[in-house]
Length: 66
Image (cartoon, rainbow, N blue to C red; front, side, top):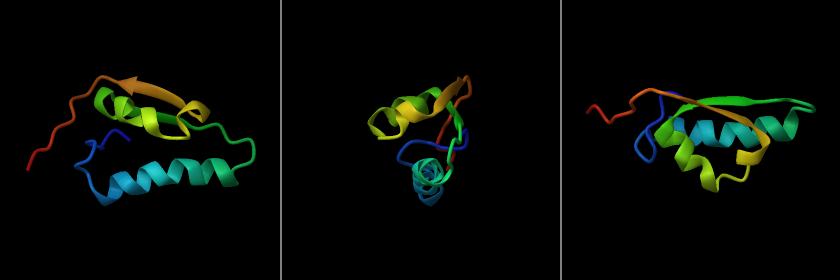
């Protein structure tokens, strides 16, 4: 999820956030690891799946470059 800019990426952010619980629901024994920038990792705190996946914080700058 390195491409995400919280609340700015739009449809691909919604897709990525919904993909994680869908994979967990249908993937028996699946272990997921999410790679994300600090800002995105912080935004995961309210996601119900946050405790069920590994989260690796990557030191990259995310920006809205429009």
